[in-house]
Amino acid sequence: MSGEKPTYEDARTIIDLVRSHFQNQNPQLGYLFFRIDSIRANSKENVWVVICSFLESFGSRNRLYYKLKVNLIDGTFGDVYTLTETQATKEINQE
Image (cartoon, rainbow, N blue to C red; front, side, top):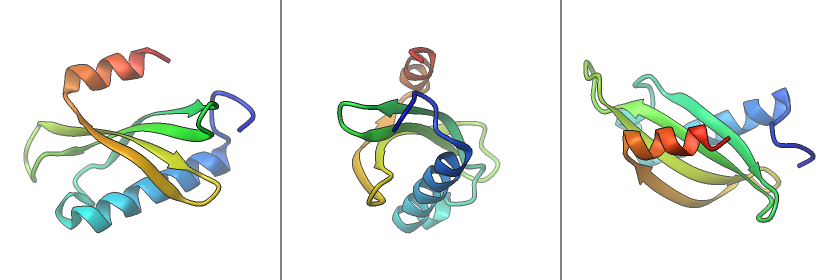
């Protein structure tokens, strides 16, 4: 993890891992306008911190926000948190 922003290849891998994780956990959310809102490095823990969101349900305008830690080396996940829109916005703006 050489910098604050992932390389294109790392970002692609992170996106695929996160999408697969949520599709396995909540298949109904898997395709409802999945969006990565933020990816940033956490060098102390050697993980990527990802903020992502989905639509709450088909036709809804409300999004469900999540924060999770991804270890790109072994493809595992650390803590997964549910965030409010306000909390997600604060996290994203910390970058």
